[in-house]
Structure formats: C-alpha cells, structure tokens
Image (tube, rainbow, N blue to C red; front, top):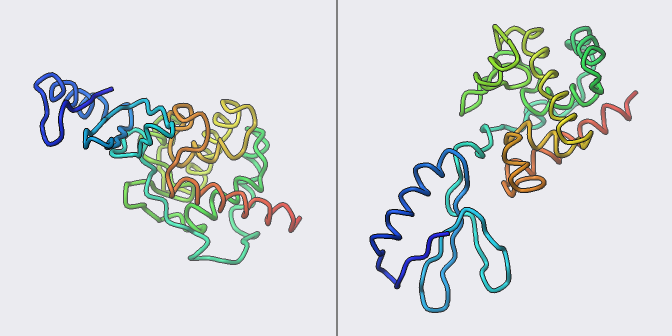
Length: 210
C-alpha cells in the first residue's frame, strides 16, 4: 500500500512505490484510493473496504478491464433458435456445456453476427480476443464454426475452474478469470455485472423455450 505523506505532497519514497504500482501493477492489479479526513490520499492494490478506509477503484489494470462488450440483446431482442444449431449442439456435446448457455453467450456477445468486432478487438460470434483465440487454437475468429469451437472450449474451462458456477464462469468470460479470482466473485465492473445478468436472462429464456 502507498500513502502520500501530506496533502498535496508526495514523498520520494511514496513516488517511487506509486510509480511501481502504476507500471508493474498496471499489468497485474487494480489500484484503489481514498482521501482521509486530513486530506491524505491513500493508494493500494489490496483495499480493506472497511468503513474507516472506504477505498474506491481509481485505476483499472489492463488485465482486469472487460473487453468492451456491447449488449447484443439491444440489437436483436428476440430469441434466435435457427442459427448455428449444428455447431452449437456439436461443441456443446463435445465439451459438456449446456447449449442454451452457449446460445445465450452468442446472443449477448454478437447478436449472432459473425463479423462483429468490439471496441477492444474481440471478434466473431462469441467475441474472442486474439489471445483467447490463439489459446484455444482458433485459426479464424470470423469463421462461425472455428469461433464457436474456441468459445465453447473457453466456457468449458471456466465452468470447470469455477466448479460449475455459471455466473462466475460468465463473469470470467467477460472480464477474465484472473479478475474473478482476484475479487473472489463477480468483479465490481458495471459492464461485467450487466453482462452476467444479461447472459443469465437469455440462458433462462432459451432453456424455457425448450
């Protein structure tokens, strides 16, 4: 944790530690701050979240930023049952993932549009980032079958990692498994929380539709 020694001033030691937090920490941790009654600013990457020290998120790590999700349901508010049925069902069976969850993720991520690219570079039906595509041997993120194969493989890994908890797996799909582990639950990002609610709503709707 870093503390500035007096209001409006930064000690050389604090400045050095702060620099380390913002450079090394930018890749691996979020940074939080609060200002106490004396006006002293406190910075940390491990907030206590107590009433006496009410830290608030100050700077998000690149590793925990969500991937720029745009709500696919706003583009296509009706359920879609007749697109990519064969690959969704095939990879659902191969990886042991509920096909209604796969369909819900595709709907939320891309509204079933295989050409979509997010502001942060996620692409295709299940909006795979380039690193995620490479991780699961996806050659062409914009090929529907290749994209679904990689996205379902990732969902299967996340479901196993979080012991079958769909909400945590879906949160990790949006914000990364590291963020979910770091926070011990759904990260406190508005985008991720909205995303989890949307996917769960869509999954329930697809399941209820039979």
